[in-house]
Length: 359
Image 1 (cartoon, helix red, strand yellow):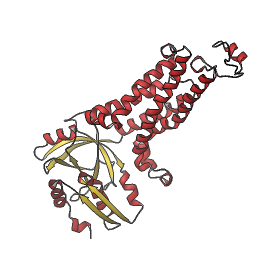
Image 2 (tube, rainbow, N blue to C red):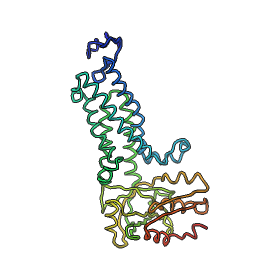
Image 3 (tube, rainbow, N blue to C red):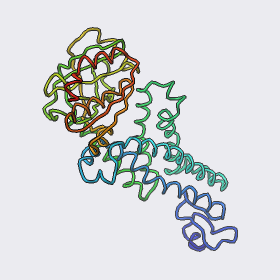
Image 4 (spheres, one colour):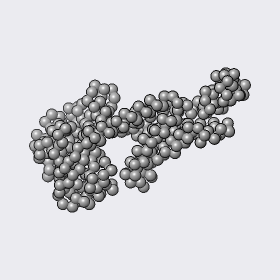
C-alpha cells in the first residue's frame, strides 16, 4: 500500500522512514516502518507455517475416520497406523510457534506504542487467551518434570482445553481461520461423538480376575457389531464403578479358549489401574463400556510381511499375542519377550496353548 492509500484508510498517516510502500490493511497488522514490517513478516510467516499443523492436530485424532482410511488404498501413501506420532510432533511445534508468533506481534505493538491493542481488539484478546492456554495443553504432555508430577487424568483434562483453544482462534482472524481450524475441529467433534454414541458398547457381564501380584485380566463376549476375531486392535475402556469420566486405551486379543470372546491384560501402574486392581480382589462379573475397536499401529506392519519378528517387554506382549492368534498358520512370527513379572508369564503360559498355536 502507498502512503496515500494508507492515509485514506485512516489508521496511520502514511509510510515512515522514507518507504514508498508499507502494510496497513487494519489496525492490528499495521506496519509503516522497516522494523515493523520485518516483525510483522516473522509473525505472519509463523502463522501460515502453522495452519497445516493446526489442521492435522485435530484430523490425526479422528480415530474413526483414520480407522476407515486404513482399509483403503490411501494407506499405501499415508501412514494412518500411528497418527499419534504426527499429533505429538505437530503439537510440540505449534506450542513453540504460538509463542514465536505472539512475541513478534506484541513486540511490534510495544515498539509502536500500540500495546493497548492486546486488550482493546478482538484479535489481541483472543491471541492473548490462546497463548495463555497453549502451555496448559502442551507442556503437561511433553515436559518430563511436569508429566511426573501430574496424574494422567489431570493432564488429559488440560489437553481437552484444545477445544476451547480452537474456538478462541475462530475469532482471532477475519480470513482463512474459519475453515482452516473450524472444519478440522468440527470433523474431530463429529468423529468423537460418532465413536462415543455409535461405536460405544456396554458389556454388562465382563469377567475380571487377577493375575500375578499387580495385574488384572478381563474377558467378555464380543459385542454384536464386532468381528468374531478382531484384528490386532485397541479399545478405550470405561468402568463406571471406578470413574464415569475416564477412558483408557488397552490392546485386545482373542480369548484363546472361547469362540467370539475377547480379553485384555491390564498392569497396575497408574492411579486408575491401581484402583482397578484394588477393587478386583476375587474373580467377579462387572459392567464396563468399550469404545472401538481401532486397529493397532502394530497390525499394519505385520500384515505386509510373511515373516515377522516381534520384540515385547512386560505387558506389551498383548499386541504380540493378538498377532500370533490372528495369523497362526498363515505367517511366521518370531517372538522375543522379556518380562520381570513371573505372575504374568505364568498366566500367559497357562492360558495359551503355545504348542497348538505354533504348529
